[in-house]
Image (cartoon, rainbow, N blue to C red; front, side):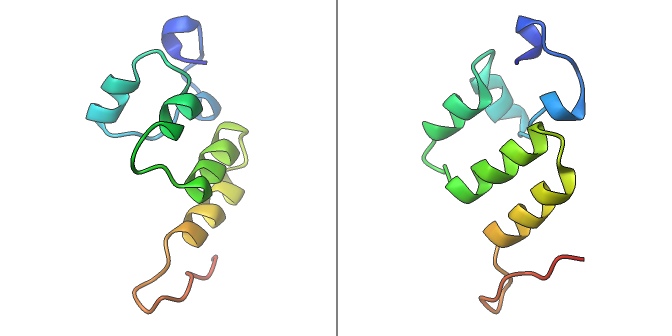
Length: 78
């Protein structure tokens, strides 16, 4: 829930976004806003969902899966 609608300033309620995107998102739901963006990626959406659900380890693994390394191989989780 956006902070402007009573949401808390906790990791589970904050989505990493650049200043411009955060400003355009305003008080809209992060997932509804993200799905309308030209840079939408369902793999990254899953990572964001894991982040907001509080599963930071899964979020990091999903982000690594969504961002293949320079060789085209996926990054290995640490």
